[in-house]
Figure 1 (cartoon, rainbow, N blue to C red):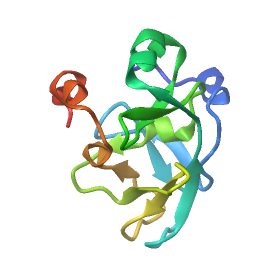
Figure 2 (tube, one colour):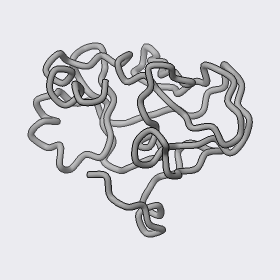
Figure 3 (cartoon, helix red, strand yellow):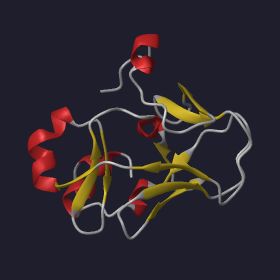
Length: 141
C-alpha cells in the first residue's frame, strides 16, 4: 500500500496537524516532519473518529484509511487519510498519544523537536490485540 506521493494524493490528505509536512522518510516510505520548533507538552492535534469493534474493522477495512486501538478492544477509525497516517513508528518516539475519558486522542510532543525533524510514535503503546501484534505488527513493531 506504499504508493508514490503525488500532488493529487496529497490533495486528498486531510491537514489535521498544523506546522507539519509530508516528505520522504529515511525510516519507512514517507513520514511527517515538523516545519517549526516544537516543545514538550504541546498538543499537535486531537484525533476523532467512529468507535467500532475489531470484527467490524476486519470485515470493512478496505473502506477505512486510519485507526487507533482503544483499551476496550475497539478501534477509533477515520474513513479518510489524514496527516496522522504518515507518522512512522519508533521505539524512541518524540510524540505520545493521550486518551481522554471521552475517547478523544491527543497527539502530544514528548521531546524537543527541531524544524525538519521527523515525527514518531511508538505504536506499541496503543492497546493492540495479540492477534495484530503477532501477525501484521510483527513485521515492524
